[in-house]
Length: 433
Image (cartoon, rainbow, N blue to C red; front, side, top):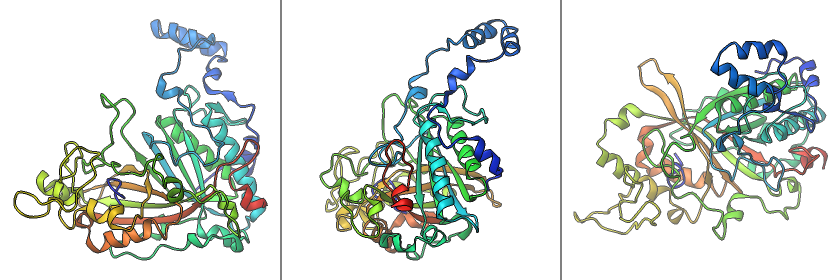
């Protein structure tokens, strides 16, 4: 696994999509809708005594201020799509859609226009025009992000094969793969994240309904992370193995950050529409937690190459100290073992290959043998998967001590175009350029 420690069906009828207008600019605030409750609703609220008094103030249009978590918002429009550079939120949904047999490029453009308008509204805390779901009426945007990408098959189905980027080639097979094709790839890919579970689900459900007869859900996965404010001070999150996850992620302040993560703005040729965009590799990686948890902490640390307590490398220092892969321990052997995850995955041992990881943990219940069906929804961003994910994963596949405790069960790679300006939609340069 390229672990973040150091690498690492719609059922809406067509009229439903018509009801939810393509232009959500005049959408009503979710919280303002509470202030327009009818008289019957007001009576019901007041009947609750003290609780009713609070409800009555909401009905009069004087809601309590949103907390910092609820009020935080991310702009939809910009040079890059949202959901790449922002920290992973507490709740996440990943979904892939396949275009309907008769859906062409024109139908795909109309769908992307609907999705973009709805996403722009929801990310500002507005209710898209015609949206009557009511799932998140009383919530703010809660750092909601919606990110949209294209799979390899999208270009064939829309007659745009000539514009398919070379970087969107299929990933090679890896020995640790046990991939389910029904939960892999897809024509269209959507990533949703928010710090409120209802806000995240609302976005997922609305986009599914807006797909109407144009596209049908192929697969969908749910993830989570530590909630904002759960720790006394902001700190690196942990995965389900208990390890700090994301310590050595590339930083925007790095001199070569942009060229590693984003397609150059001056891109020319058939895939010029990808300028400012990025490629995402998505992997569902089940962790063999029963086996992992039976190991001693000392053994776990040697497999990862970091202290479990604070994330510091076994070569010494603090979490952010650069690992010293040449340091010897008091016993005369390497402080960081030769097959330790951070050694095998490090850019220093992979000719500088790096990715921006933005993962979610997942738990989908328990398997027939009682073991947890849980692990990591691995999401990695890069300017070219052939220079980022693929060479690193090949090396991990050959010599990563952590691989014995992982099963790669689903996979996909998607081209995620750059952001769009107000009045535009995601992918417009591809579909109308």
